Length: 241
Image (cartoon, rainbow, N blue to C red; front, side, top):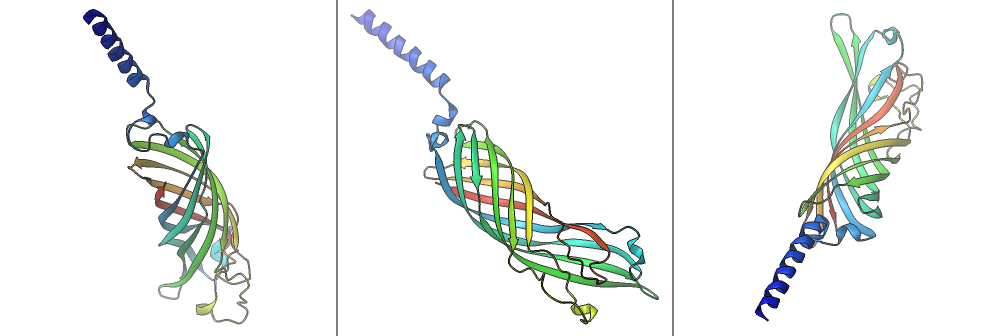
């Protein structure tokens, strides 16, 4: 009898060891069934740097002795709602509509009689963004995981001054007019941390605009620019249940 108990106990120990060894690491630690759930919701807080990628016209120096045009990024922030749909254990579809507040400045350097004359055009925007991404996540190591994502979306600038008329307005008050609508593609990576009741992640992402945003209205600020596209760098913190 004792021998049988010994054999049974040994068999159970060996079986348990094999089960633990074969167990998916996603089933250990906090939120054990997280990868198998079909849908997750959450929210995201992001800090951004928004800028322009500028391509000037050929021989742009002919425009009123213009020497150069430089765009400078300004800090901003985003607040958004997050929904994530499971496609496969390690593959999800993520939708993250958000509102973003951003600013950029475009500086024009003209050759004056004795020195350089600088004209600065500040652009403040409030975007409604609708990005959709495919997310590839790694196996978890206990309560830590990583992921890559790529996708694209649509952006609507609620503060676009596209309809402003610069005719007859003095140079210092003329606006650099940009289009309201844009499409973009994006890519990023992040690390996820599984806590007892929720998961949070830290993510870095780069977004590049597709549309040419410049509106040509025959001013010394729009004429020298051939292409004007958006560029955004984001650091985000997401929380999901």
